[in-house]
Length: 205
Image 1 (cartoon, one colour):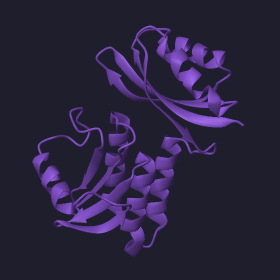
Image 2 (image 1 turned 120 degrees about the vertical axis):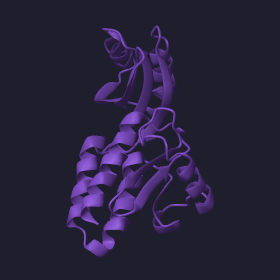
Image 3 (image 1 turned 180 degrees about the vertical axis):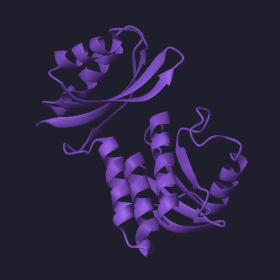
Image 4 (image 1 turned 135 degrees about the horizontal axis):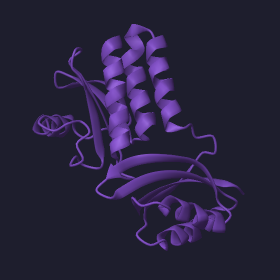
């Protein structure tokens, strides 16, 4: 049975590295459906590859083949739905959904959009120390507020941020949208995506 997986790969920033990885994927009869660069810098690249495999049992072999490329390591592999939407299209769809929603429903739409974009376990919208929209089971609100307050000096896309939490401030509206997941690390491209979504929401609410 055909299986679609997302593979997050750390590789050296050198010509041919991605080609070597793609060749290893082909060696196990995998088909690369999409590529997204999550982070780039310090002579390293983190890519997210969407791959179709003819059989789920090939996942462990796929991981071993990619890890065998010099300087390359697999951060995470997970099975996704075959019709998983491209993250960039998902971001545009989220913006459209917020623009089309009734004003009274926009924060709920934002909360759901944040969860989908980050593939998060939970997402919340905060105002004045209270959760006003929520998806999933968030951490204790007092802890979350304390963490956000203590991280106020950091950029929303700072590379030193924790890998399980992301947020975006809506300065005009006085709101913050935050999301988190425990399954795999949140990277720079995802932080940028949520920050831009928050800016769009700030102009709409």
